[in-house]
Structures are given as structure tokens and as C-alpha cells.
Image (cartoon, rainbow, N blue to C red; front, side, top):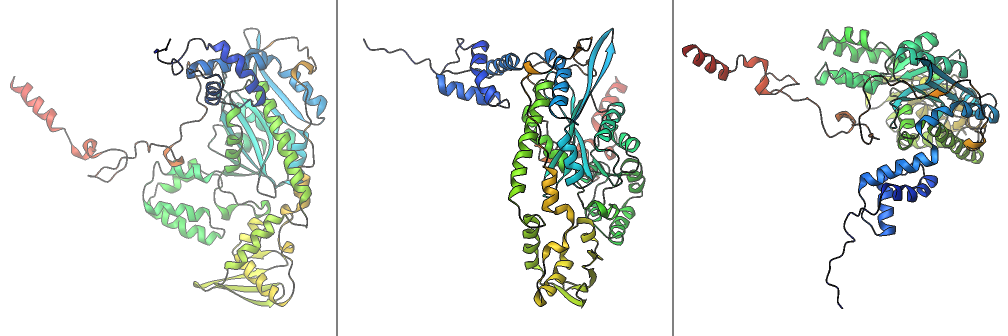
Length: 523
């Protein structure tokens, strides 16, 4: 008999329950804890020829994760066991847990983790520059993942420490920064770069009073744009990127002349360093943006919904693999200075025909710019100096120094490695990743710590968490590539930004309301 009924393969079926999805998703989560619900949905549909509802898959994944990692409440109870396991396997590592007591119960408050190889790698192999930021967690707890990153000789992000705090405020940041000081000590020369984190600026000043504090210029610039509009204010960019104080003052004079409110605004709200000319040249880092912290945030973006112990351990695992990979890279390097730095400098020497160098000695000369007849700089190779100041700030020869080195190269052999700072050396790169992040056992084998109390989840603060799935990606603002530009409407009548012509204050009283008032009067 010939069947004439239609196929049901394209319909959403009730046979695939959340429990069925959870059973199938366990293997996927074991293989990749960062797998997203959309990927699980597609794989299950392709393999089992069913059509699934997204929310069924998402809730099924949550059930599978609970079965694998345990509940959120259990995750907090395991923290002291996790601390004991790290201290047992990785001697010298710092793991601190802070708690609060409420109605006789002990609740989790903060966590800080700094592995011994990360501490030693920062001290022995990185520049004295740390970047600090935090990012929202996506799980059941509305907490913050706080991170400390540094910069290795390859200009790669180097993880120093991380932790969890309840929210961005002065007390939490003060506690976190005190743990950072316990880990790295009090270096004689140190730079701390931050974003606009609430309470962090004062915490850094209190814990590291001698440190040079920088702020992310990109964040400062977009805050600045909310109050000041016009092309002349774009001179803040060349001012920020000016090594010489005279050039910085030239651009800032134009900005200050455009509005008398600029100077008080910068003095009161952005008084940290964001300009090259004020940076300490000994750091050999001229970053004006806090991109290092953003790199770490992007690195952990897909795992921020894990329970706290699993998230902390997953970050440890990622750092362990990162160290091994970069240690293997360092073993293949030859020479004194990192090959990519030498390759970069050699490539730059090929486009310097507009710079005319004249030597007064084998270590001293002057360089004139053919495009700017009134510009001339003095280069001293013995002390690694140029009057443009770029060489002093970066630790790598500037264009003027490279033009002069080209003149020396034509007379005798010149080794480019002699003109690069030690921070870019192969030995320092190897020292940064020399330590081994120790592997850990599973949670069933961790030491059992009897604290005398049960550690409860954090006390809910602020706005109650909404129902449903938490966003993994924050909504980007327009200047980050988002789809909207906020309320940057420009009025065609007065030219001001922030409203349209219909709502312009210069319109006066609306004629429609005048008519209504007249009609009411005659009635």
C-alpha cells in the first residue's frame, strides 16, 4: 500500500525532552566546556534527524553542566578544597578567600589566585607594567572576574593573577590590590594602567603610592566626547601620541583655546596619565590604551557562565597550556634579541629615504627630515637616545636612529641587536615562561578542608538577576562598532548635538498649545 501521509521530520517534537538533551550533551561538555547551545542543537539535529527547540537545548545543557560540575551552591563549598589543592601542588602560589557573615551564616565574598610561575615570570621576564580590569560573569552569580595582566618581550598578554569580586567598589578593589601587592611585592618602578573602574583608581593610589598610574585613552576620549564636540578637540589624539612635551603643549593649547571648560574637566575627571610625553621612559612601554585587559576578557568570554570553582580551574588550565606553548616557542629562538623585533626593525629601514643622516662620530649624528626642512634630530647610539624621545620610551630604535644606523651599516657591519633594550631579549622571554603551571587532580581527590562552617553563595546585592538566559556578549556602544549611536542627533536649527529640530529649545512655546489655550480662554 502506498503511503500518502506527509513527513514529520521537519516538526518540533516533544519526544526530545530536556533530560534527553542533557544525556547527549554530557559528552560534548566533557570534550569542550565552552560549547554553546546553538552548536549542541545543530549537532543533535544532524545526528538524530530531529528538530529541536532552542530553549529545550539550552535548559538541557544546564542540566548536563550541573551533573558534570555540581550545583552552584556546591561549587562555593569546594573553594577551600581547591585552595588546598593548589597550595599542595604549586608551592608559593597565593590563593586567598574572603568571606562575610550574615545572620549566622558564612557567605563567599572574594577570591584571588596568583600562581608561582606567573609571579616569577612577571618579575623576571616582563616589563614593570600591569593592566587591571574586570568583566561581568554570565552565570547565576552577578559577580566580576578581576584580572591582572602584563606584557612580555613579544608584546603578548601575560596573565599575572585573577580573582572574583562581588562588584566594582572601593572596598573590593582595595582588598584585591592588597593581594596583588602580596604577590608581586612593591617594585621600585611600576606602572598600573586601568579603565574607568569604580573605586580602582583610589585603591591603586593607596596600595602602590609610588606607582605611575595610567588610564586608557580610548575610554577617556569617548567620555570626553560626551561634553565637547568639534574637530579641534580631535587634537587630543596627536597630543596623546606626542613624545616631546613641546609638541604635546602645542596641540593642547589649541584644545584649551576652543573651550575654557576643557582644562577643569580633565583636571577633575581624568587626572591620570594618558599622554606619551609624561610616561616614565624606564618602563619601555608606550601603550595609551588598556588593550591587554581586553585581550584577557576576550580570551575567557565563552567560559564566564561556569560555576566559580570550575571557572577558576578552567582559567588555570588555559594558563597552563599557554605557558607550555610559549615555552616551546622560546626554546626555538636563537640570538640575543627576539627574532620578530629584529625583523620588524630591518623592515622599517627600507622606507627611510626621506631621512638624511650625517655622522659626527660612529656613535653620534644628526638626522634631517626631507619632508620637513625645519626638523632635525640628534642620535646617540651609545646611550640609545634620540631627541625625538621615541627610542627612550620604547627601547627600540626610532626612525631617526634607524636612518643613522643605515649610514653606519654602509661603512662597517652593524648588529641591530646592540641597539634594542634587554626587555626584548630571548633570555627574558624564556624566563617569563620558565615556570610550569602544575596540573591538578579532579575535585574528588582534592584535600578535604574542615573549616567548621559551610561556605554559602554570595549575598545577593543590587538589582535582582532577571529570569532566562544571561547574555554572553555585552551590548556594544556605537564607538565600539555597535549598531546604534545613542542620542547623537544633530539639530538643523541650532547645530547642537543631542536633540532634533522639533525639540529644539529655540523653538519657544509650541503653537499647538497656544491655540489650545486661546480656545479654552474663549470657552
